[in-house]
Every structure is written in structure tokens, then in C-alpha cells.
Image 1 (cartoon, rainbow, N blue to C red):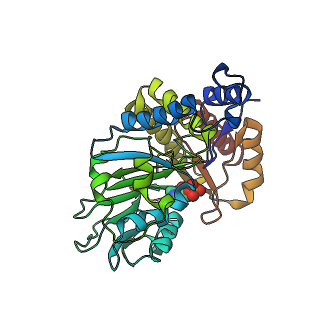
Image 2: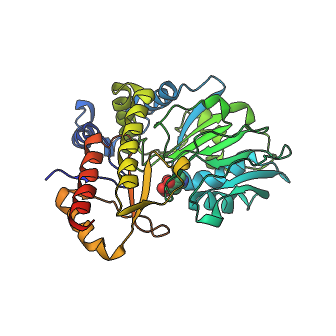
Length: 356
Ligand code: PLP
């Protein structure tokens, strides 16, 4: 049976990525060796990371002022890395607190200096994006999370900021057009729209670096990875190969602008049904709804087993909501076809026919 994978991440990736990764595990580039047993410094491995970097630059239209680097440790290691690289000794930073991942970013940054929370939606269990807040001029940077994976909210318009904006784009990078020049740094764990888990990408404005006065460990210094072209130490060749293949697939689909249109259609399809169908309620404020993660609950929890059974019959998997929100979460990353969303909507309609 065909499976429709709504996982929040690691998530669905294009079939061609798996096919090529599987082949590379058996025999990479007809070399007689597996991609898992080769040096990251071998010529064709270096080509992989160079191509992946070039594709990020191309697909996101990264300006000359910025550079792209890959690290391990996921987005979670970028939380302290941001502060190490941008928060001056004795300095301050401003953060928007819009979800659990933002909380984690704040927690890590607090180890390095004073953190001012300039906006928060914690009062309503993060079901909206705060607006009309002021970013102070005396902070080293302002940090926000573009898409709150757990709560299903997304920043639609980034604030005008007097200081560099640093953004955790883990769950919506490459899903919509972004003007990279407006950000001091962007980072993302790979395991949603970038590719398989195992790396994080950072896109960094180069002239912001080297100014904190801190003695940064080499690995956590973004500049190390820029200078060494992300080959400072052994990087996961298979994971970056997956990123490269996924980005090649995205380019073949017509790039970010083309996929953004499909993402909008997918999101509109599922939200229309959530709003129409009397058995469900969306949990995020309508204007702040995420195009990547649609969160909703059953109006009558007693029917959960019945709804889950219908989902199972239709091959819909990984729709359970995060424990902090409950209910359901339809994650609709780039590789999820519109058809899967239509199947989900059909199930919701059938559920209404039976129990509405
Ligand atoms: N930030 C956001 C918005 C996320 O969705 C996640 C994971 O889902 C993270 C950070 C943490 O990413 P990682 O597991 O790569 O550390």
C-alpha cells in the first residue's frame, strides 16, 4: 500500500534521493567502494560537498557577502554556535520566543551573555507569532525562528531590525523565497527540506565574524568552516550526498519559487478542510499558520481511535501531534506530494460522513 508520510522530521524525501543513496552505499561512482568507506577528502567526495554548497547558494540566491557552511550537531549545536560567533564578551542579544526550539536557543545563548526576550507567545502556548515589538539598537543581534515546527506557526514577514537578524530556519528553509541579504545568519538542521539528518547548514554574513573577543573552539567557529570549505574534519559523506541529491531534485522541480507555489496549494488544501469540517479545529492563529506544519485537534477526543483507524487504512502515517500541542500535525515538507494532502483531506471528509 502507498504510504503518505506526514512526519515532522526527519521527513519524507524524494524517492530518487533514496535510490541514488542506496546505489552509492553499494558502489559510489562505479569506484568499487561504498560511499560509507571512502575518505571525505577523496576527489569525488569533495565534489559532493562543493556541489551541495553551490546548490544552496544558487537555490537561495546567496549574495557574495555571505558564505555557506555545513557542520554536524544539527540545529541544536547552532544554538550555542550563534552566540559564540556573534555575541560579544559582555554583550547583549535579543530573542523572539515563539516555541520550544526558540526556548532552547535562548537557553544556550544565556550561557554567553545577557539575553533580552523582546517578543514571546508563551502566554498562549505559542499559537501565534508576536508582532509590533521593538528590537533594541544596543544588542549584537536579534534571533528568531522562522517556522515553529511543534506549534505550527510561521513568520510571514520578518521584522525590520536595526541589528543583524539571525534565524533558525530548520523547518522551512528552501520552502519559500527568502531575501538572504536581510539576514546576518541563517541556520537549519538538514533533516527536513535540506536532506537526511546528519548535518546542519549555516549561511553567514562574513563581515560579522571575528568580533566577539571570544576564544572560540575551532569546531564551533563558523570562520573555520568557511576557510576550510566545510572540510575542517571528517564530515558525513553519505549525509551530505543526500543533501546534494535533494537539492538537485529541488532544482529540477524549478527551484524554490516553483516549490513554494505547491507548498501554498498543499497548505491551503489542508487548512480549508480543517476550517470546513466541524470535527476539527486548527490550533494556530489563522494569520500565523505554518505552510510546513498544520496543527489541529479533534473536537471530540472520544473519536480518536476511529479517526486513527481511517488514517491507517488510507496509509497516512506520522500524523500525531507533538505532546506539547496534542492532536494532529500534518507536516508538508517539499517532498510531500499534493496527492498525499488530498488523501488526508479525503480521510477527514470520510470521518465527517461517519461521525459528523
Ligand atoms: N529548530 C527547529 C525549528 C526545529 O524544528 C528543530 C527540530 O525539529 C530544531 C531546531 C532542532 O534540530 P536538531 O535536531 O537538528 O538539533
